[in-house]
Each structure stands twice: as structure tokens, then as C-alpha cells.
Length: 107
Image (cartoon, rainbow, N blue to C red; front, side, top):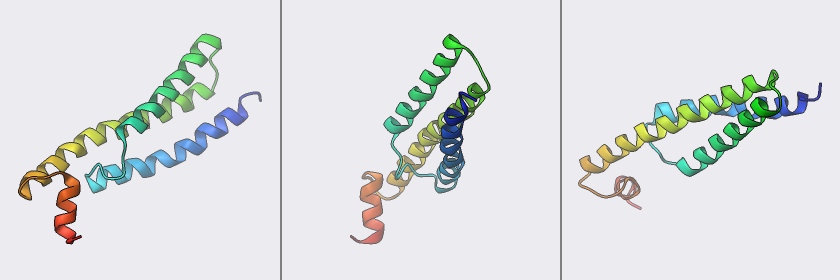
């Protein structure tokens, strides 16, 4: 019973990651994503996993691993999408992805 609230926090965070993964997969762009943010979150989950391993493993460890795997997958998709953003830039006569978006929308 001691870890119920820790587990609940991880479940709440974990519910959001599939939506983020879906968006990363379908949009194929890094827009709205920060790799630094993803790395900081991943580091936090690794710290939680390390704490559980050092101070006693329990069922909450599963939720740390599940969330860490989803963040890792989103990070991998970030780098995949960065390649797509680069190809878009090449096809629109150079410039950054933001420059190309501005060209497409005539801002």
C-alpha cells in the first residue's frame, strides 16, 4: 500500500505517452518535440528504476520500465522524424523545416 500513489503517478504519466508516440509516428516531423525534454524525462525514469533496484524492488518497477520504454521509443522516433524534416528541407530548396513551413503557408 505504500507505493500506491507512486504507481498512480506513473500510470497517469504512462497514459499520455501512447498519444505522443502516435503523433510522432503519424506526423513524421519533430515539430513540437524537444529531444532535451525527452532525455530529461528518460533520466528521471532511470533514476526511479535505480532507486527501486537499490532500495527494494516491487510492482512499481514495472511501471517505471513501461514508461521508460515509451519515452525511449518516442526519442527514437524523434531522430527518425528529424531525417524526414531534413528531406523536406532538401525538397523545398533548402532552409530549415521552420523556413519551409513558412514558405508553404506564406507567413
